Length: 329
Image 1 (cartoon, helix red, strand yellow):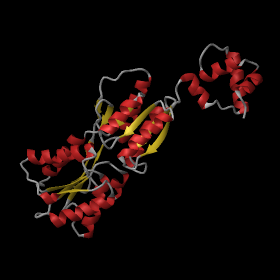
Image 2 (cartoon, helix red, strand yellow; image 1 turned 30 degrees about the horizontal axis):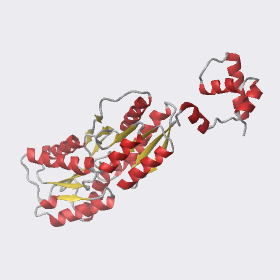
Image 3 (cartoon, helix red, strand yellow; image 1 turned 90 degrees about the vertical axis):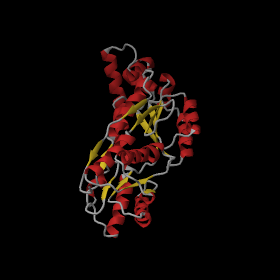
């Protein structure tokens, strides 16, 4: 493997000149610069990442912590993050928590030990241990998906989007509306979207039967089970169901089909996520689009601003959404 000394010898310049060309730092004549570039290309020289880190005090890497690598939402957010960071000369290092809150803390500490320049967390909880760990990192940090106290956060409009879904149902004549949520440990999805449901029902003077409110764990299977439980427990069958994720909505759709409950004639259905699958199930699922890729790009921009020395005054940035009404309503 050629060294910087070998490149300097081939180009007929000093090692300092090679370093200046590679780091684009300091004056080098155009002729000497050209000889260095040609020598680097001919010899296949690859600068040491560790050496660059020692010089610049930066690794050129941003750590990204995901709740689950396999989800479409996560992949879209990551694509937005990577596009923005790559355009600015940064790479990403992905870690996965598998929806375990303790692994969020483990991964923050791991990434800090790897000397990343900043961390982006797709957060699923807001516990104090997490907040304390973030406070101890002392490097640029942005959370996405949850509003974390004292942390720059990019959040979805969970409340208003859920509220809008229920009003969409009501505008079509539905007054018996079921709900499939997730545990309240996930504040944004488990608490805020649920509050949007209840507040919209209350605004329009509609009661909520106990059996209409069920919970899953984000999976297709749990949506299926929640729909089954809803029809078994409800004194009056709802005519519409709002599931807080597309996966659970599609799971519920599967159960309704098994029971010959026609969607949408007998049961309207809405999810959140604008997943590719939501377009391809039959009937096509109505859903909420949170523009995940744009969210990733915005999050990356906030990290870059911090790396460039900007002190962010706005700690919470709320993103837009749109309702996509398809055949399931």
